Length: 439
Image (cartoon, rainbow, N blue to C red; front, side, top):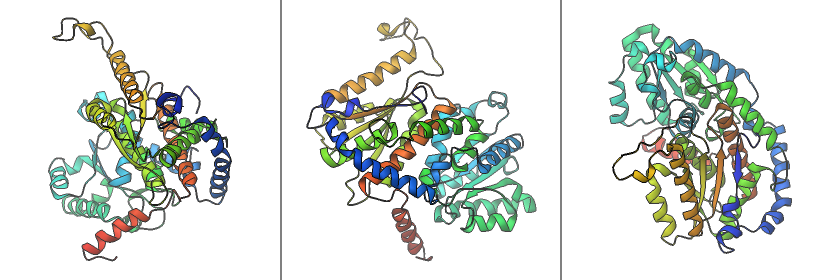
């Protein structure tokens, strides 16, 4: 990563911007440097021991290339692709694909999609939602992709069981040609089914939790089916890994992000962090990052934050209400794209907007984001801006790699294991018990 791909601007979270009672002091960052070096060394040691799998995902590995090549082969065979995923897996797949694929990919004619299939995210096992989806497509023209890191989540298995049964009844032995599995390489019911039925499958490294899996086939295979540049994503991630290799949290942008958020929570009582997408394509990324940081750093007793997400275009009023209502526990992480990939000139003569005539929509959007940032500053709300110049495969790869490292580093500063899955296990156990399965 370099400044052309990705920047972290913490000035809006410092005391000079929002006051000593709200913002972080430079001296506090300096005081955290020794602890940061310890966390850095711990992460390097854990990575050497094979406990930090996400740190190696930027390399052009076998599974990433298999996913890319298989997507190329499958794209011409099917009109539709359904991604069966829930929770972190659904967020990850949607974040990568949503930021790079055409926002109305599924509405374009096939030629406009470069021959690619329509790609739908089916992220619920609810009977109305799943049932409505099953009524809406022709099985013979559809590929179904079951995505579950563990391969044993109840929700994922419910989705898979319903779809598998329907395919078998309607297609007979050919059902296996319409199923793909993305899951753990060794364990879980989905891995066993893939081996038993000879299904095409992709591996998610055992040492990579789902929320850290943007650079595994969970994030890359769905995106590849929609036509994103997998090599570009991994190349950007590689650049990010090089840029964020330093141990000093004052110069390492990923560490600086984590350190400022940590100090805001532990020293200023800013324990609710809102990840805000400044532009629509980053809305799924804001959702994914909020999950990534909360589940990695926001553990009980850690002093870590709770996290939520917003889409500025749709929820600017809600954000203003929260920040202007005197809440003193809020900090904002604003995700911003500097340059739109598509633009239009606003026409003259539009009712009530003569003052916008002949301006570009990108200028209006940028001004709106800048105005929001100014509003937050005036309200004393600490704000960190994560900025990419434009949405490309490289910048998105860099964005995700840096966020993964920031979440892991922030957890280390808080003294918690960023890869612990206690919450997910507890929820899964409760659901199984309630349904009469194993606890």
